[in-house]
Length: 268
Ligand code: DGL
Image 1 (cartoon, rainbow, N blue to C red):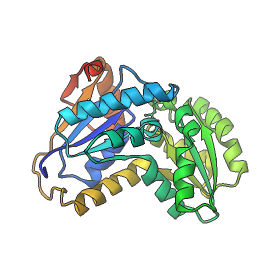
Image 2: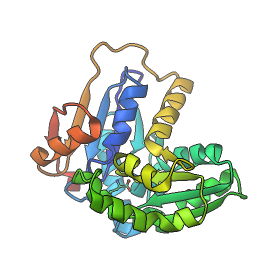
Image 3: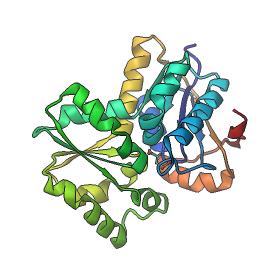
């Protein structure tokens, strides 16, 4: 069991921001990643479809014989993870609870902003998770769908992106938040831009960092954390043409990505 890889999935490349943190914080673990690039994006889809896709993503990872599953996608975590976790006898963690815990620990003035896809924001998962920790915290949620393509297209330094961010985030600034959760896997790529717009008085919470920390704690508690592995193995599976995946993935992961294999996810 100890030697088995950690499995992660996302609607596409965004979950690689979580993989990157897992590799940094758990350097002795093997990793299997599934990116559903063929059916991306999940954010604008209905609950039923996101649930169906998440079931298939998990079924595929189970076939890879992983020891733990991370839903490295805010949308899947927010909308489907609780149901799918209840249907499976393998342990899973999504990115919502770690992000919510980190935000609740960080805020000083009790005002937290959440940004994410339409599905994540509509699900109300982040406010519920935060209120579960402290019901006095005020949570302001906002869908910022345009941030996803901007991050994918490498638009993090463009004037146009800055204008879009100013327009989106104006309301959160007016609400006086001191903590902002980047509730979408793509948003960490726009961290600098978002920080510039929000100003130094606002702390950004990257769910990827908080999630990797909780995966580590969890595996440690269960005695499933590897303490040595001279040659960790990273495998990447996608549901559409791998050659489009590699360049974007390398930007997300900040390293070369080999071993990209295409799978037919509709079989699961
Ligand atoms: N991975 C998704 C998330 O974290 C963003 C992209 C999508 O809409 O599928 O919410």
